[in-house]
Image (cartoon, rainbow, N blue to C red; front, side):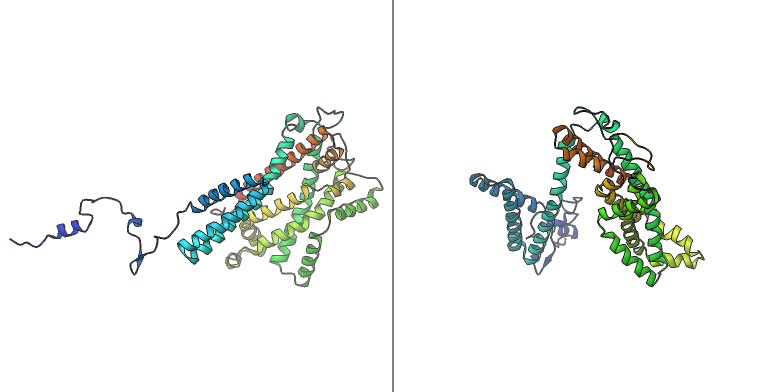
Length: 376
């Protein structure tokens, strides 16, 4: 009888699937890859290392700041410095130079994101804390005519803001869209360069200049002391149009030329290619550009003070009489300096923020509805 070990016993002693652990799932970390016998993953820090380092830095600096009576801002600043330096040093000595540089870059990215979020979160907190007490159905559905400290709302400002911004959008969006199509799709030569230069100049124009321009135009047409919502809409369209042009132009440039050439190869005319292919592909970016332009003008105050004025009653006729808008009402109430007017001002600011959020949400839904399938 042979005494040579069988194949099955040899594989079993080596820990093969035929051995005692047959059927067990394979764990790649149990047998890490190696180079010349040195494991490649044995010196990697865990994925939660940065957060643990942040907690340790906060405890250390917080204790020192508590003993030294530091301000909260000083504690946070020192914590950020200790976190970045400490985490980078540990990673550098434990994982090597390459991963140390990666830890430094990662921690700086997180720190930059936190610095950007601080003013945004503080702004939202201030608006909510200042305007939540007055914000409600009564505030949204009543105006300031005959109001005292305990009542009165900004319904007339909401109506005026929506009407004036809507008219300005109706003027600016077609002008901006067609101008951008001309600049990108028809390559107008020196005309396109001149238009681009003028658009760049108009992008930086002060808002008060746009208000004075619109007021002077209607001054010659309707006489002095004429204030109406249409004048404010024209002033806002002067500010809004160049933003729409530049935004839509950049979105149209991102559409691959292969799509245009494929459409032309099928015999589709140029205008139909622009409508069905180019605009359909760039609809999400175009919608974003339009919303940025609306957000640019919906909070303007100076041009509307000149062209529209201020009233405490609801005026739904943009062709005659003064109208109120949310930014102007917020400025008026805040400048009075009383407790009740300050609450109305913060509530008006909260209403304006919520209005912009709702418009952005509606724009996202529209762009998602008309975007090509498979795009987000």
